[in-house]
Image (cartoon, rainbow, N blue to C red; front, side, top):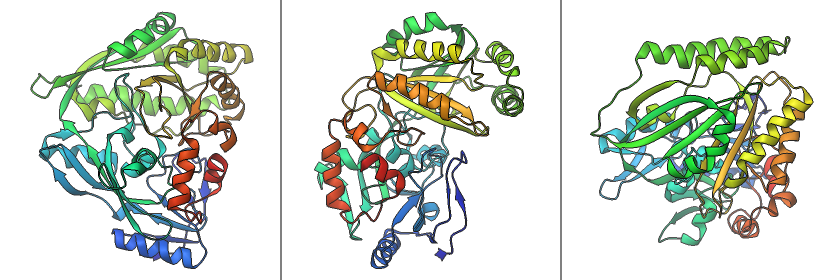
Length: 436
């Protein structure tokens, strides 16, 4: 289906565009036709998922391919635990789709609004020192390249392209399906505690390596970290989920409703922010529960914000966060959003932020009605001094020349791009900046 483009905005309202044309393909054949037609007309094509990237990676001034009709399970190999999904399938749909087969994703992030193709193509990850990002779970995918040809990339067909295509930034083609290596469904025992910040920093490396999934949040203007430790349990273990009312109080009334009001007030009365941050760290982050993995990994986020996240060598995290803390204090900024710290295992995907090294993540945020520029640039300088790599779907100021220095296989990725999209059918301003 084709339509005249209306104004498209991403979730954080940091990017907008009016596409020349919007198409909604419901099959690989329809994607082929759309790409071929655009190429004949000299137009560029971008696929768009849920719009949860903070960067302009999905901005489509030419032809926007809305993959909302390309969803669901295509095939299941129960014996090997592999599931092939249409590219537009949203992460929040996966628990229902995988449940009949007794399967789950090995790891997830804390937001599930993205599509599977969008999440993997931008490097979405969760936390856990022994676990990789979502793209590491890909064992095969199908895409339509710049010539309008369908390319199957698996462990046995075009296998040399897998390290590039698993996390391809939308630069190599339009993904139409993805095959994931899943694991048997499991429970997570969650322990959430407020702890002294310095003690948390001192124990971060050990806990990131020892615990299944460890992360923490630090509210600026406090000396407390809100730690989250998730331990994997078999599905046969006893469940102890959060009571419905209790979860609503913590995750909706406090984390979204009250917090939204404070963020809005803080834009005009910044002085309220430190007091609220101290109150928030007293009211939240102290609970235990055990539930199926998606119910523990995922948290509803309805307060809009802007985010920048950097991946740095894991052993640099304590020092880097201390520098961010000192920066905020020195500048006298009033920062309402917490800083998030996570980890991931090293992997072999060429443009993965965790390529070739055990990784720690530091993410900073600002309310979407606040200008993040000064804060983000100053934090970015700290992260770059620690050999940082920015999350592709989150705000940053890096360009291709800068990024080439921190990605050893950058040139190899560029060669695959030349092979699959020599005419740059899938380019846009963001990709021109970060890939050249």
